[in-house]
Image (cartoon, rainbow, N blue to C red; front, side, top):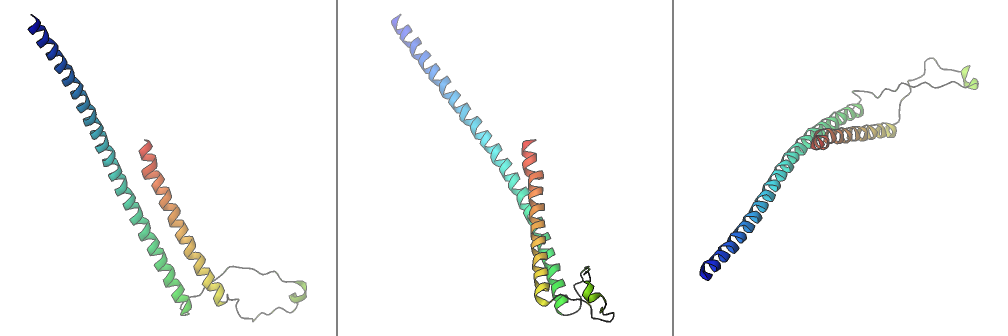
Length: 144
């Protein structure tokens, strides 16, 4: 009788240990599956970011190329920088105005600064567009 009782206790103990180990294995398997899902999401997000980065880098390169071509044309006198400006006349110079005077023109330094500012504007525009796309396509999709 005591042998049966001892075997029953041993069987109960090993059954309990087996159930405990199976629970641990199930928990670890679930954690692994969750980690794989998270990694897959990160991989997809990385691909989206790479596509966005490539798109905006190409657009910025195109804008810089166009601006460089425009600057080259202005330097080669094939094109001109035209400004729409008005200069108020002072009463002292109003009577001596020149009807046949030459057109107002920016000096070379001002033209150089103009193109530098245009390049910065193009760069900032592409950076802002890239950040907006990142927010729309990555951040907001992750929330939804």
